[in-house]
Length: 95
Ligand SMILES: [Zn+2]
Image: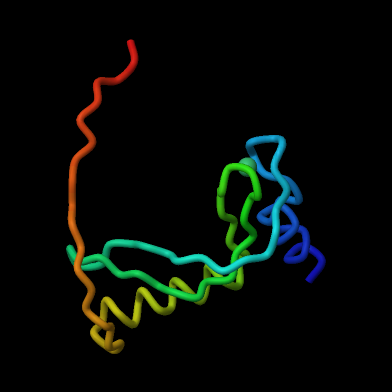
């Protein structure tokens, strides 16, 4: 159990990677691709940096998201269709 706790602590930082922001509890959306489609999971609790908007998910939330994605992939979840568009970023890598 102690090990589990340590892992959690490691996964949930107190401060943002940007080094200056503070993490606050908030709600975000998690977007991922499943079977060539896009799934948007709404109402996802997260720690959000108040400076750069970087989002951190707890291991529990990550596990729940994995479950939802698995259910969706296996057709056990009914999702509300939304419009989606895909574009490519046309940028040359910095030399
Ligand atoms: Zn930040």
